[in-house]
Picture (tube, helix red, strand yellow):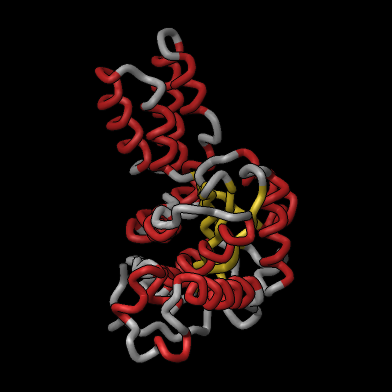
Length: 301
């Protein structure tokens, strides 16, 4: 029943799709809502009690989403065989360092410990970066999302100037770390006189935009590890589900629905495109050789 409602069937249309369950769960809107509340609460508990001591998480994607005025930060982990795992959620009044730190501390307690090197992919928010440094310290390498960076820079430019800067940035990202940074610093210098805000945005966190280049990852891995697209896709599923809710009662309801929506999106998770090359990432991070057996016939996405 919970899966059907999360998929888009309203409580008013429940009778049409579940005639066999109607006798046990009821068809009244109120009874269906109560049953859904129990199911979504169980989903939230299941998500936040997950353990990862036996899962080798090599990468963590973190992104925030706002629903009904509530800011929620979500984390998706990437294991050494290329599988994605929904790690957890944290709620706050804004996407600040305390909220992200709460989420990261929860991950540490549940097996994503702070003594092992990992790559964190974030959208560039300073609060996220600060929280990662506080919890994971030097064991955390951070890659700033390039899609966010390009968008943040070009939004500060007039329309006629955007295409050129976008092309320069994409070309620089294909170079080595040193060459790419030099190229973008030169472009920022060119922008400085007329568009200082764009220049400042381009230079902010510049080195961490090239973390994947510094690690000398393969092109396939760079495509998957240089943006937060992997977590933004389930964020889109969450928005589709939550946009159908017309009345939000409280923050607890937001978290319950988001947990149910994320878990539904997780059903469609597939390996990343570059999963065959993840040994390169493990080696670059200084981790021991993985013992996981990768099925090379498994589809990726």
